[in-house]
Image (cartoon, rainbow, N blue to C red; front, top):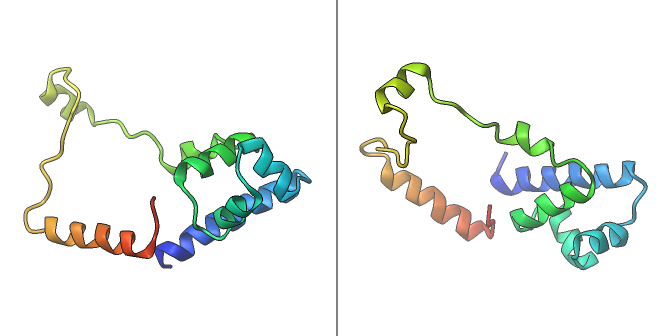
Length: 114
């Protein structure tokens, strides 16, 4: 699936949650502080991530984000190596920095902000 298709699928699932709660698009948009048109854009996969979070909060489904991006913990060996310090940056992989920059540019061209 493309990034846009995944975003549209997330929007479709959010809209299904709305329908299960028997709310109109306008009611949910008002609860979040969006226009109905902005909500429709969210459902089509063209939303700011902060608006997606706000809609999930209004639908009492914020816990879904925990499974979406679960918190990762370092292995005990890695924690010992760090001696109690919290990791601040990654070293990255040599030779891959150009491809990750190309992906970021491709996402920007698609109009996705998340």
